[in-house]
Image 1 (cartoon, rainbow, N blue to C red):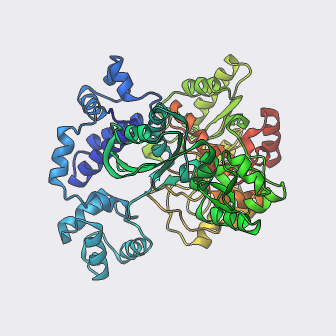
Image 2: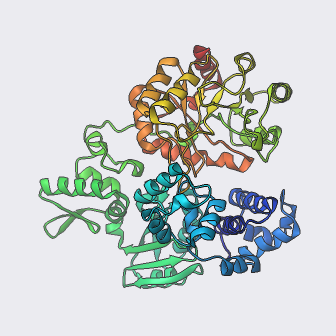
Image 3: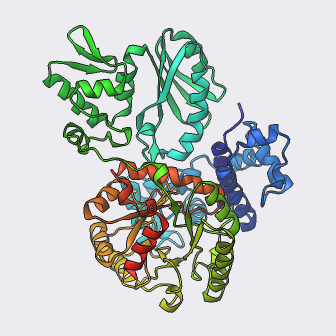
Length: 574
């Protein structure tokens, strides 16, 4: 079976990691990283492009050699370079890259100095106090690594929701074509739209399970059939993701979908409600004695328990059951509520699509407005804008706005928040913009009180509007920096500022708990994609998923408003 774009991107990133550990040419490494990101955001499958006879080297930054490797990966095969790198590199070394503070160069240094080739070897060396003897490993870094290992770093990472989605959707479509299948859905944390998933749970309806089992275990991307029974089976896919399938009769579909979707605590609470009513609830249905009284649909099941149907994103036992009983569930935000995107980059800084291209792509999505937020000058690697380049971009925005009635490009910038809370550009420059998005890109290691004070000082600037990716986390890569989030949110609300829910799948920053905190404080959030290419504008759906997990409604989100209402809120800040 052809590899998915996510699988291809993961292998390109792996090549880059292994080359980096070897100390290869930085430009070569960067080429593989750019290719991985490009493939990951393509709107079409690479395999489909190849089948249509399209040349991959027509893609930006992809030459004939790299195009050939991508084509090989798309066929489910490893290119010779990857096989060679894997032979030369001990298998546990790549896993060290998941430890905070360890990049490829430091991993190389540890291997050269101490022979460390696995997380277990690193843990032992840390326990023996040997890390401080390695050049470049001071007491602070050694302590950081010890703390990270104690916190579970190095364990097998969960799969990002966006990556799991690329694997799950083709498998689900394939299963729905099985003989006798009348319905099939992915349950579990995937359906709850958690930011990462451990495995996939699929519930399918069929009168006869045997044909479904044969089709499931015969899926071309299966690496291993772990278990197979009459109505349930487990497979491990080529990319490492485990998938469990349960086949149920129509009368049990709602009960099974409910059972395999809810978090454990949610399901326990439902079962207790059933017991209190003299009923028994399990994956087969809701029963009074031997008689099934509900179970064909989730709505019937919840109604029979005296509850409103609870959206999957809320099924975490965090107050949703009481709200459903009292008819106080929120009217959750939907993707259709979003009217614009307030954080994106163009080729003027580190984006891959021109300003005009981003505007056209956003307009095609039905948006009424966007904000262009290229980086400020301090981020030199991102070709950040100084005052003169920003002025030229603003002139281009004026020209495009004149050419596109009914659609507005707002002038903005993602300005660096420096260590002392000052901004990377002066207020007289920032005051010419429609809004200012501020972000931390350095000194993640400040103490919580100092980091919080840094953010609050930044918000004291009269032009400051939105705090982007507020905790700086990168899922499976970098933990959030320490700060007093409640203090920062209260400070933002007092100053008339806003926080961002960054929809990039590897960020999803804020998390769901922070979204609920913002809602409780009356603090509006902007859900923005931080897109670096036009295809990444589609990441908005992941931000909406996270917002729904955080109980947010349309009124809680800044960019659900028509442009005049948005401008009115922005003027209040000024």
